[in-house]
Amino acid sequence: MEVPILKQGNYLIATIQAALSDAALLELRDELVERVGRFRARGVVLDVTVLDVMDSFTARTLRAIAHMTKLRGARAIIVGIQPEVAFAMTQLGMTLEGVETALDLDGGLAALRRGTKGGGDRGR
Amino acid sequence: MGVSRRCAAEQRGAATVAGEIRVSIHSEADIVAARQQGRALAAELGFSSGDLTLIATAISEVARNIVAYAKRGEILLSHTNQGSRRGIVVVARDEGPGIPDIAPAMQDGYSTSRGLGLGLPGAKRLMDEFDIASQAGKGTTIVMKKWAR
Image (cartoon, rainbow over all chains, first blue to last red; front, top):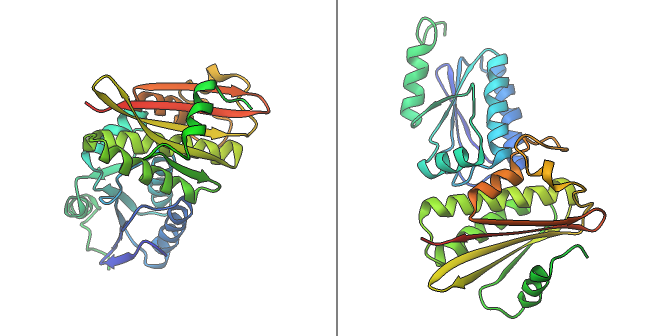
């Protein structure tokens, strides 16, 4: 597994460490979807700060991760999209529609805590 | 060979012209290498960090196109000058099935693979110049340029 997945309370935090191959990104997707069940996670934060390129495949896979996680009962938030990457994605025509985003890891965790019904730490 | 004269010239120069880089594309793992090499060359040429991301993203899309449709091919990276302007030239070549009808392939949302259909039209938007030549059964060559500002 190239991307470490940390468990913090009811949340899973996956922080991408370096440019990922397609295979590694798909592995992350499968692992996250599986761990949401194993740890009964209520939320997932996926930190993409390190990515200096987000092409159509990456964007499509991130969207899939967010939707699959949601189908498993957890909320997913993508954090850390860099300004240049946001600009390139817009030019390319990718929108990540229906996917929650936050500025950074702190913002993502804050959103999860605010938004999860009854508070993020309930029901442990 | 479905290759335009300009590309053939660029290909001949590949071995001799200083700073020209050739990246073989055989699998999706090579896509990352191609865009990292392209970003490094563009950085040497003095592109802004925003432009570096645009160039790397465009390279990623055309390299992805090779893997998806032709299985193998190559990306050639070089620099060019026009007066005082410096630019990067990205050539994506394959000898795959070719694109029988280029017009729909250049439209957003058109894809015969599992993609979003943003690859080629998206890459065109990211770069300053974009030429595509393709012949059914012979292959596809894309030449893209971006000028440093």
